[in-house]
Length: 364
Image (cartoon, rainbow, N blue to C red; front, side):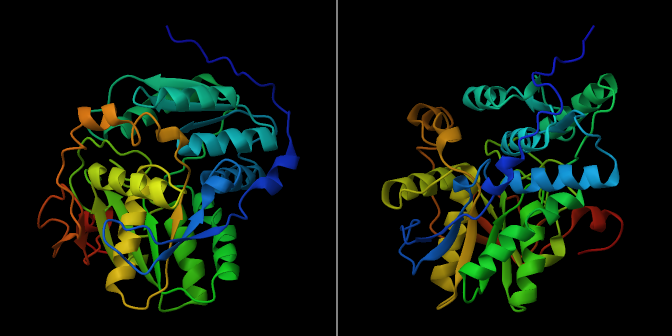
């Protein structure tokens, strides 16, 4: 019989002095060849804000729930995570005085498990993916079990919570202050929070802004079939409601080999780098800066490289998964429709579909 998890922190231990540490992150000018020369693009370095990019969403979701009375002072917070939001919730839990229980899976890196526990989070790990929906569906099923045995616990539901999106208004404001003009925004897409949160605000400032979504091969978000994915932090086997499909002008699917190559190039010559999402958006941003002559391009690097030392930056890991022998694309393969072909490497599509809406007989 499964017993209720022990919460490591007593409720009510709020440390609101942490809240000013969120955001206010710098922009870096990136000119690294990725893999070809390009004029450069801007990257928002969210690794330099406390808790990384997802701390913005985590604090927004918990504060929103408290305002509505859904989260009582000191009550536990339970959420599913592949790692990055977990760090943000650990930060928000300390800042606002809530114990945090995170449901992950056995593919969560050992270093990330140690880090989350060190920050006071309780971890529950599922050991096999669901037949439909993969690891995400398996985590959510376990999450519901955990909720049932912790009285008063709150589930933020990052995939469908509008406060996730609202948390990125501060980042949009910062970009408006840091940039005189912006033509193209490149966003990785997972829960859909930061792409939806940025696009709406920034288009009010720059109405002609072009938005490019960057997804993982094997992700179902934009109408491709769901497959097992090596990349974590972007992509999804389910269809989060927070993904605002209508804001995207096009979507690119990027494979793990291209992401690894981009990350390592960044680390060698720009010093700033990150993980799967960072490599994917850097590749597409460099391409956009190259093909859209004179365009001002910006993207977000969600976190730094430390979590990925055993994967993206590990030669043995890359060799085991065939990433060091993969033939890398220098430009995307273009397909006319998400169902025209399955993306197995860097692929571009200018037809953007909302799969749930299409199921109901409509498109987005």
